[in-house]
Length: 427
Image (cartoon, rainbow, N blue to C red; front, side, top):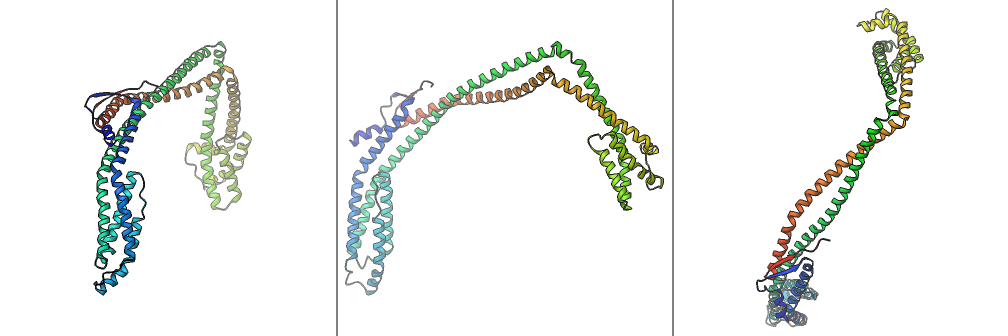
């Protein structure tokens, strides 16, 4: 039986054999099973011998517990032996109590540990017992040696099994890499199909958007809105011009108000400080205030500043400042008029803008623009993903032949023949 099992593992005639890819896992399983059976057959005798020698050694150790010391031994030797014997027996019993599993590799490892423990005990506390118990210690050493010899016999068989197991594991890994690559190929092709379908859908939708946008832009109802759009643009431009003029005037006034506020604060004129701060807050707000709010603030703040100018506490440094405070009443009216006009123009612009926004065609065009932006982004992302997928496919297709070659080589090395792998049909 052993000869037959070994024949399954030995190299064959050197011919070429054909092996289907899907049969490789089963073939490796059979080879591993045969290798394990060979190992069991090869170690059966040493395993039995080790178990017998271990039992005999345990009996010898048990007998040592009740043995008498050599009567001719020196009293000092007897005293040392008396102290060392319990320690030696404990160490030996601990080593010999180790269970020896049925699995050959586990049996081998446990037997090695058993012998190591026994040797350490013999070389440790046991060396003090050689003179006091010469015959018993001789038998113990012989028992340890007997186990060691059988372990050496097992070592070669275990080594051959490990080498074969390593070859099988390497072949399994190669088969796993090949299988993973083929599975990736299947999933990749399915993913490519989905990507192409999505890209086709996006392209068709973008084409539809382009067609609809062109139709809406040429729709008579939409063209009729051109005058409304032009009017809305004119109002926006007028509103912005009014805002710039308002900002320029109020910034000039605020700059002088700020100087006055510092002077008032220094003089502890709390009422004037409050008036000036309120005016600056209204003039510097991002929203244009009402004419009533602005004129009220200016009418309260300008006299405070004018008095400081007249008293020489504030020097107007440029033409703009001098123009403003040369006639504060006119300045107040001008700013108020700007506020009124800005408010009116802003209201007109909002009405025109709302009318345009509520019209179905501009609303639809804006919706199409947003959809196109989203689809353009999706298209770019899908195209990049498709490009990356094709790159990975190309790399994989270049790798798969090498994986087949590597697996065939590993199988051939075990079989001793040239192995030709037959690729499975795509799933």
